[in-house]
Image (spheres, rainbow, N blue to C red):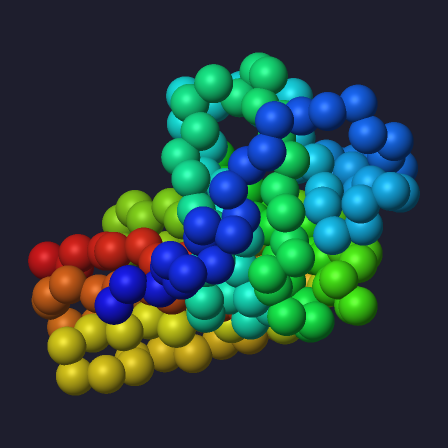
Length: 199
């Protein structure tokens, strides 16, 4: 299913950057500057990201609809003005993904004014599988609920959860039947998958 809303995509076409007065809120790889004179516009810049390609998207609050998406190769000088005037009042999130990191910059729009909130940095979990033992590591500084499911062809074989800031688990999979399995870690409304084979 195409999640991109093309009708809004055109409305978010980037304008040439001008010297408009701004107030900056920075952090974690993405900087958003809101204009004091044109409150429905904001400058989105990438900061100190070293990657061959970065994905930038603007999504609704629960990240089920994408209003804008772009693959950026030259991150060193990426800084562009976005016009949010066509978006309805509500909560949105600017999502930047590169390598194994995800940065989320929540924003709100109220009365056509862009309001920037605190940046959220999410590092992808680390999965290690050896000798039928699965190690899972996830950095969870907000101590939000983290869930792990091990799924096979017939459904869910195992479930676990926790709220530790440094989520670390070791699972013995030696009792599972031979086959292909998918490990799903879910946290902060995001899911990450990892495939394992047991012979």
